[in-house]
Length: 221
Image (cartoon, rainbow, N blue to C red; front, side, top):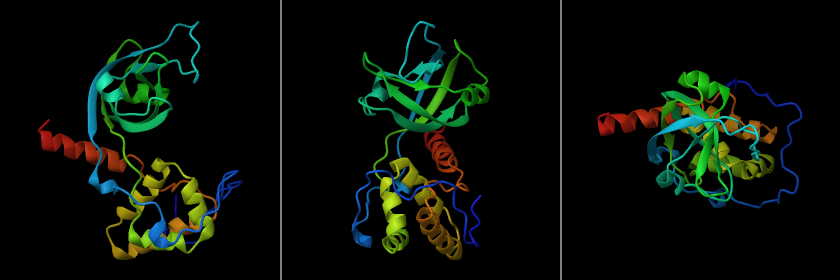
């Protein structure tokens, strides 16, 4: 867990940049900006049956427990690469990989933790709610300026996935007190400078669960 009041906390063996990463000369105002996490993605709800491919089937991922995704949802995600999605399965929070099928559409990898949390197995039909695609998160002004002050932090920031950047932004934005937010901004830059790609104290499910709950209340479900 990150200590917001202390300094060091680097991960062993972490590298500040990935091989081949291009150096940047961004100013604070030029760092990536787009939609804020608070604007909220669409909540996509559906039911699906969990299945296991035949033993003779060979998949790229080796995943043996999957579920199909309805076409109307599949159309909203990239068809040429895997995508990490977050949501709930029978109310249990998860992050999992959505992979495109060779014949079109997508299927979701269902790991053991998801099966246990959903109290389900192959052959069962489950209820899912996942967050729709989100654009690159907006970097808050205070975090943007702080990142601009550290080449190491900014370079690693550029190398993170969009979801990785969202986690850091959500951590900063979830602070309720100005002092707490200021500490989190400083710790974000410090940890990124040390090569730490993830804020270990972030509850990665908090935003997603709150957003789904708010969607439930809005729809009166």
